[in-house]
Image (cartoon, rainbow, N blue to C red; front, side, top):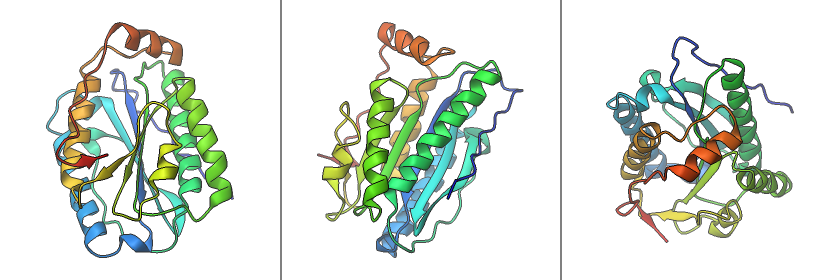
Length: 235
């Protein structure tokens, strides 16, 4: 079934944007303490992003959940307006559908920037899961799309596995640039603090332009140093 896209832009804000699609596994295996810690971690992210003068107006976040179905839980929202929601764990793990939806959302948002005359940073696709995809056919085509987009430098992909049953092998297929990491225990808060700090590093840089090629050229002249994930990630 075709998904509705939620591209939207605040044209009163002339700053360049970095679009971040958070793909969060909310399947039934996340029930109990994992989903509670995920909710608390996202709350921390919402608070942290508002503390940064640049990141709060340059970072735009969409939350896509995949538990039973893949859906846009939060459409793209500027960091300063981002509000936490209580996520509930249920259902299977349609990670392939979530990846397709995330890619579609990022492409639509980037097009909205162009139509509004706004420059942008390379978008982020940030995937968090504690299991294996239950839609293998969709997953295969989604992985191919992610790799193609990354090869064209149209996005940056990060993948995080939660717990011993996370399918690290599949997550490793998503990117030729970054290996997936495994969350240390349930260190969601630390991970989201890192993500907020990373948005500060990106939004404080000059690696933005009006086209993907322009962004790539800008990145070639200025390296953005992201904070170390030490403390929440393990390989």
